[in-house]
Length: 492
Image 1 (cartoon, one colour):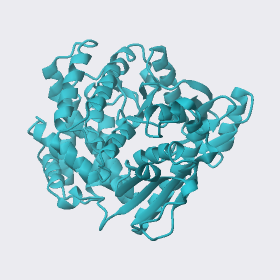
Image 2 (cartoon, rainbow, N blue to C red):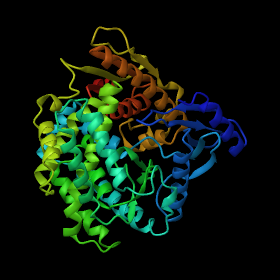
Image 3 (cartoon, rainbow, N blue to C red):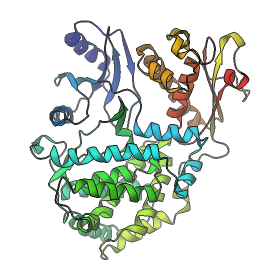
Image 4 (cartoon, rainbow, N blue to C red):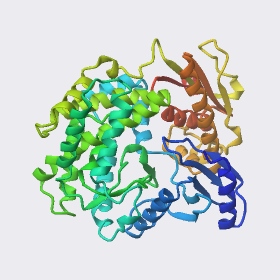
């Protein structure tokens, strides 16, 4: 925890821009100790980060400036105070590649994750999303090869290379925070022997490149019509295979296997223009790196979900198990990994792990409304009489602008207008924070319903926009069913 993070960031903002921030909003936390805030000034909005780990901060700031010199789309750094553990960076908005995936599922009425998983297995994937992934894969070799050529890897955190010790850390993370917590039975000495052989196999690959480390959909921002990239502070020197595996094997993204194969082929073709990499050589170690990445992720899910008791990580375990099953079908690995292979098989064959995180009964249903205050409040269908009603009338009304008057908050021009409005962004951030807390509480207590409503003057623009944005955000959470209704549009 960083108890005075807001004060530290406010001072840095004032020293940088010459005036105090008008508003500071807390942003949702990830699985790290870093804390993020959106600071709004007179004519600018920035993201403030607070983290007491000086070496990690140094690595992120150094890499950010290095990547920008190479023309890569990463956030600009405006100011830093390493002694106070804070820095200010460019605000890239709130939309990630993962939230775009979630929004696409929401449009199709697939909020329950079991339905999204079923669709992934059927092999369907929208071309508009595949196009974004291809754009991302156009950028990845520039990080890995171009930016690596003159990069001082000694600054990287926590190690300069993804070497044998780094791999052993990840494998033991998997052993202690997943296998032993689940639990899965194994012979510890035999498993350690396999870990050594598996590590030696992985290090046969060429490891001269930049390894981003956490190259996945939640760390890819969609800003100004193109992908931007964040959270590379753990990057170091390593093999090409790791990052493409991180992206394509991201369990919660639920990319169909056929699409993963197509995107992998696209990447192998692209990387060939940057480095002398043969397809056969690359693929000979690709699935091994995909598996070590997945084991690290399962360790993280086990630690956060089973040890720390954060329930929303548990469904990620079931996604990871399905991913493991698919990888094992495709992987050609060394034959001398008997105990590790048995552990993988026990995971895949365990029905409890395949259902991990599933909520009993109906789970939590979020009843999400947009409405007009002129026509009264929406009815709570659950009968609980609780939840939130957010008054959007404090945000500028695009309906009073002639070019938007005939549109709604579901139309792209209105959404873009509100995306760029600072009051709207702050309002949405505050609403997300409050609803996220209620969702966590309701899931923990086993409650079945939560009602959230956004009201504005006519129920056509602002309320619809905020309800749509919150629906996409909530669809990232496991154990939820979101029922979205735009009352005034239904009645029109």
